[in-house]
Length: 293
Ligand code: NAD
Image (tube, rainbow, N blue to C red; front, side, top):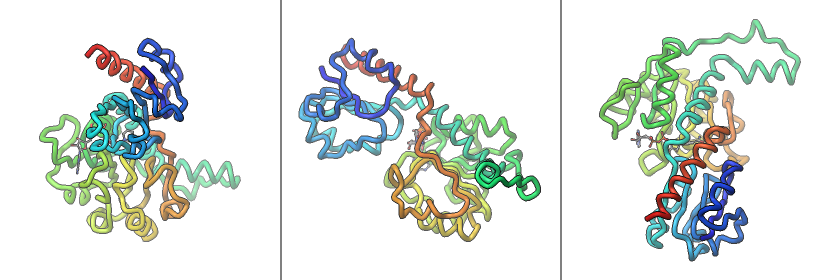
């Protein structure tokens, strides 16, 4: 069996996979691969799948499966697995880091001192997360971890998720509108699908509180970039702190790259050292189960 590691995984993984067969990271060997390990960089399009005639299984190290054309994989009888439980804490910690960076002006203060030699002690007015309302769009694994951290900060935590009927960590609201109307901070934690694509658009933004802060560690395509950039310019949205983009990396023409009050990270939510190890453990477990079938 040939196992092809297409993207970045923990460096211990190749050795741990040797018991299952030959392990390679040479993507030119896709035509020989029985199993392909991908994260988000590799796009498993119908063309990519057609170039892998022996492929029986794709393992996505991570949560979202939007980089895999699942109907095309299914049509070829290729099993698609992911490692949904591994990444929750890693992504939640980044979401929280982004959320803390905004009211504490961390980026602005640092850049002023480091790049401009300015000591903005009087100019920078901080605000607190304490007693603010956090609106979570989706209350799955990652949002659940964000909710627990927000509770520790004394935030009021609301969530909208049409597929969840009960939550121990958030007050559920019946509609996205209800959530948007109340949130001081809005954090996106939904998968990318037909319902969530472009869900944060002009109309949604109009229903938000003035000066809302939006944090996005979900998917860049859940927001309409031009609409958000306009709302940042007008001040309707006070800040957008994001790890995720319309594409990785964003197109240089993305209006968010030049919009005011955007804090950006390069899709590193799942990339903690600890999480790469956890993802590796889940990959080994999946292959163990699959080879014993
Ligand atoms: P999850 O499946 O545990 O939770 C997703 C939740 O979204 C579910 O509870 C689901 O019911 C809800 N949902 C689906 N459609 C919805 C809608 N239209 N409105 C409101 N809620 C809806 O997944 P998770 O592990 O919490 O991950 C969430 C997403 O985070 C992933 O799908 C992925 O896009 C993103 N993610 C990003 C990174 C990163 O590096 N930044 C890493 C991992 C995951």
